[in-house]
Amino acid sequence: MKLSVASRLSALYAVLLGITVVVVILASGIALVIYLANFSGDIITARHEQARILADQFHASGVPLKQAAPQLVNALGGAGLRVTVFDSKGNYLAGDKTLRPHILARWLAPPHGPPPPPTIISGAATANGRYHAFSFVRTGRGPLPPEGFGPIAVVNGGFVAFAPSLPLPLLLLVPYWWVVISIAVVAIVISWFVGRHFAYQTLRPINDLTQSLNALAGGDFTQRRFVYSGDEIGTLTAAYNDAAASVARAMSERRETEERMRQFVADAGHELRTPLTVIGGYIDVLRRGAVAEPTIARQILATMSIEKEHMRGLIDRLMRLARLDSETPPHAEAIDLADLLRSQCDAARRLDETREIDYSVEGADAVMGDRAELGEAIWNVVENALKYAPDAPIHLRAVRNNGHTTITVRDEGPGMTESERLHAFERFYRGDQRGEMAGSGLGLAIAKRAVERAGGSIGIDSAPARGTTVTITL
Image (tube, rainbow, N blue to C red):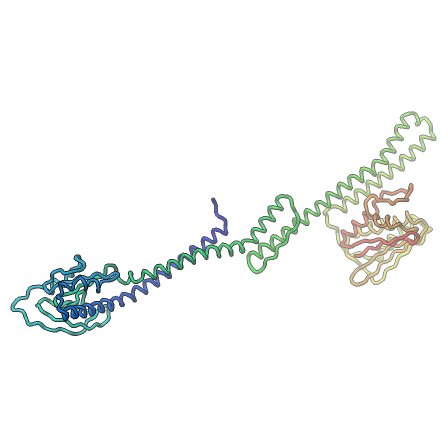
């Protein structure tokens, strides 16, 4: 089974700590071994002195060395130290039979010539770099131990030999090993759990991002933002937030586009069905013989021509709305507001020469935008005023205020009800009391879309008998 990243990081923490602990134990152990190696000379020297004191006590009590040997072994022996007692001729008396130092054979070697008298020898010798006092009685001619000191202590009636059963420094370190190894095991276990906790905390942002990405892959485009800063995780989450925001925005725009397209197709189909139905009905009438009646035929053809123009206008508006709904960016340029409003007024006066139509510009020279689209937006508002506010004056005005340019188109007509005002910018909406008045219900929808593409907003203020004011803010 493949381990998780958190588990692998925890194991790495534990291994690194274990290696560190082992290195510390080995380094401290070597240092202690060196120190205790020097200290072991003091231990053997102390045993030598203790052996001579005990032998002297037994001798003073009249106990020969042969009888006292077992007690000497018990008293002088200990953990990690072997003891053997020999008589003055080198015969084994008690202790470890395997311990017989080579120096003892040289010491007891037969002399060449008459034996010298017993001599008390005293002085100082070195062992492991330390000086130790010694004193014993020489009864033979054999060579002295090297520098008068070694694994043999000379006592009354014989010798006592010492040797470590194990390297004494290592044996003295056994309690230290147990304590240190126990602490190391506990520390490694604790480091595993602590490392696992920190690893999970460190990897938690990645786990959160993984879950969010899985949700995105499953079709859930709800934006989830994560806030982690100060390191690589913060950079990763910032990149994810930007990507998720882009995806959420794109999917939202896609849903809106699809919804507009479905609504567009449904409304267009509904609006186009009416003139096609009228034309198709009149064609059936003509086929059934109405064509033989000149008067009826002329009326039918005139009506069909009106419906044809209605359908052509509707298709033109649908195509303009589709163009405005496309992702093609508008062609931005500086637009002279005075020239733009003047051209709109001139076009309106050509349609109704008797109506009062005027414009004014206050502090606004030019704006940035697509002249064709912005002109079409204003014209659709003016056309609505010409159509739904008959004979009422129409006033166009442009004002610059607080960095914004506001264009208003106000008429003094009958105004709208609150319901009509709320739905005025909906596509194909034509109000509740428009009767047989020609129109497609797309004028204000086209104006709204054109203004939005210019980065502005559009609103409407109207009430019955108070006229209507459409405000475009850029």
